[in-house]
Length: 332
Ligand code: ACO
Image (cartoon, rainbow, N blue to C red; front, side, top):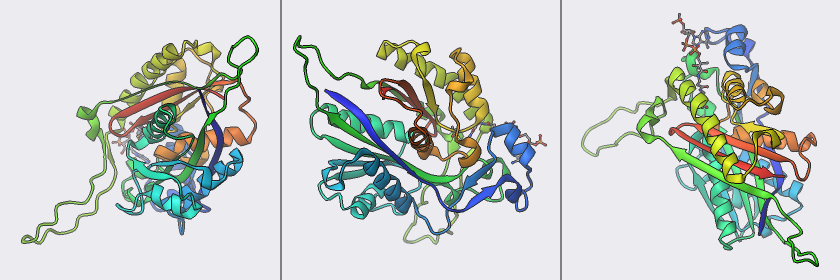
């Protein structure tokens, strides 16, 4: 059985906010933001929602795959910023696309969310339950950042990316050898919940019948240096393990498609893996950190630029809130 990514799509809000524009409302500068993070600008929603961007990205991925919405069996959206607690964003995507046959649900694994969702969809397909899954990573992080906290608000952006995962038919040649190979080669994922609060955003507080609790809005809070230390040690180790599982050497990998948190984290991972930085494509400069949407947005940009050719081996890796991490080796 070969399970492949057969289509990608993405959707970014129309509004672009540059570092220079941000520095007019927050005490920061383009120089500080770019030198510490690699970010120049980010897309921020005005009228768009997590569901509308998810549906647009998903529709584009289906179009890219040449697969109709009615063929989709499963929709998983990875997000921490859904528009509703219920229905899930995946249910809204199902309705928007008219994918009536599909089961739909969301996953919350923050910046690792797309990889966790991809792995979950893969497991359903591998078990023979479904043939076609839509996997989406989408965030409207601008809803949950405190625009007065310069240590966090400059980092994030909004957007969505999607991939279609499909069980491809395998023929056999005369000698009985499998004709098609590749697809999803290996996964590995993990969490360290004990340290999870170094990156946090509270949910709704208790609403006691008899006590009048004042409503306190909650925003993203982060110990940036702890997150940095976590990322630069955990990500290379995770990639090393998944390469071992796939029986693939780092040198065979054409691209390492990493969660776009910070260019310094990506450079450090490249160094630890002894891989050329050119193998680590970036969308950070124009998207910022879009949490669960980072990896599928970048993957779609690469796909549309023709950077991915059948047979290329790539690594996908997400890491962040939880603390969580996940990596995959994919043969395109
Ligand atoms: N503009 C100007 N100055 C700022 C800003 C800003 N936006 N933010 C903080 N500063 C100041 C601080 O007030 C501090 O000033 P002080 O020395 O006078 O006290 C100084 O800059 C240094 O602050 P630090 O927080 O120590 O800055 P640091 O060098 O650690 O960089 C950063 C912060 C970029 C967040 C870094 O810790 C980092 O890269 N962390 C990784 C975490 C990350 O990328 N998180 C994204 C979300 S999680 C994820 O996706 C995995």
